[in-house]
Structure formats: C-alpha cells, structure tokens
Length: 342
Image 1: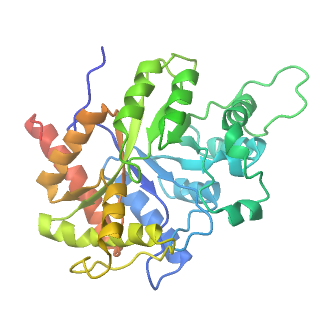
Image 2: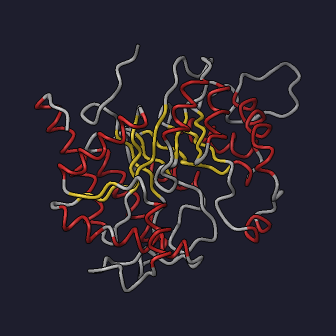
C-alpha cells in the first residue's frame, strides 16, 4: 500500500492565471508569470500550470498554450502545463497539435490538464465559435483527443502533426464528481479545483475508489488546488488575504475587477450575504504565518489523501506573492530536516 503523503514530503506545484493587478497591463502580468515560474523552480516546486479563461477582467491567461510555451522557454526543470484547457472551447485536433508542439519543443516537461466548463460566459462561448452544449460531449471530445496522441493507425485520415505518438500526460480537472468518475474510469490522474470549490474530499475519495489501472497510470494519483496566502505573521497574512477576498467578491457580484490592493477591513465592502458567499468559495483557503500554513495544509492532505498540492495565491504585489511561495517551501524543508510533521 502506498504511503500517504504528508506536508513534509508532498510535491508542491503552482497554478497561475497571469493575474492583472489594478493599474497594470497584460504585458506586466506575463512578466510576473515568468518571474513566479523561475522563482518557484529554484525552490523545488514540481509543476507550473496555467488556466484558460476568456473575457475576464484581471485574468490574462486566455491563450494558454502560447503562454505555456513562453514559460517553458524561460525555465528548465518545471513541468509546464494547463490547469486547464477547457476542451469544449476547442477542436480536439487543435489541442493535440498545440500540446504536441509543446512536447516536441520541451520533451518530458509538458502536462495537459483538461476541463469541461467553458471558463467564461455564454456570449463569449458564442464568440469562440463553439457549440454552447459541447460540454455535454466532453467524454467524446476527450476520446477524440486521446486518439490523436496515440500511435497512428494504418489508413488514418487525420493525424496530429506533431502530436501523434507523443505521450503527453493528460489530467482531468473538476469541481464536482463528474470528472472524478471519468478520470477513474479511464485511468487518468485527477486534479480537484479546491481553490474555488472546497468540497473536494468526496470527489477525491470517489476517484480512488473507482480507479481502474490503465496504460497511462497504474495507481490513482490525485492533486488538489488550494488557495494559500502565507506571510511572516498570521496578522500580515490575514491583511494580504483581503486581496483574494475582494477578487471573489467581484466574482459573486458578477463584476470581475483587476486584482485589488489589500485593505484593513472587508466589512465596509461586503454585506453579510456576500461575505457568506465569498467565504464559502474560499472554504479551503489556507492563510497565516509559516506554522499555521503548514498545519492547515497537513489537515487538508489528511482529509483529501492528496498526492500533490497545487497552490494558487492572489496578491497585489509580486514581491508578496513570491515571498508566500518561498515561505511554504521553507516550511516544508524545515519539516523534512527535523523529521517531524506539522
């Protein structure tokens, strides 16, 4: 039986949306993304994934494959990927060609995480030129995509060039049990979006229970996304966390804003119903100084039996964001050196 990871040993990874902060541009966001990737690479993080979104103020990661290639070209050891590509927005052949190109350029470093939500609103789905009901055909689209990555068959009329015969790891992403069930059925790794849907325990356990070994994966492997705001003290982290709270407040209101600076108090900004909605979405959020963060992440690992953590952190200043990822890595290294658990 595999040994259950704890915070001292679990791989750490990063999810980035190329956030645009108030007063900055998409070009600034891309420079910050590269700076973050290089920063976490130097501190031993395993993956750096980028999430596809469209028509969302404050999020610049719309051309996910393009940005993934840019980040891969500026790093050396990180696995770079999508967390995820929203497959119903695209023809599977295009995704196979894009990620086949990335794998050919950066062999052994590319992941393809797939989601079935559009990652945007209905008007933007129509602007993308896709069937608004394509998400209902996600299993069919996935099988088509996987076929393009397989070895070419004799007489195959359409091939992904590059892409055919390349074993780009495919992950299924989800915020419910749909993708957990599908990933288990197909023997694929699974990543749960705990950074905005905290009820991940049941889906991750269901995935393990239903998992079937495949040519892709012998044993289940589940990762959970978690929002983390780490600072030198608990009080400073709670102050910095108001940036992510404002982000989700704007989402609740249907008026997405660029990333806002932290505030001394959220109470003047939201009403009780809005506060409850934001805190529900951030139910898995980990906020605090290094000791509190380590203890909270340990509890999350025990509750979900996660094999890997994918951390997403919203900060107004890049320096604070980099420092947060440093503190998490340093807290893990201290535990490794001491042989203790948090």
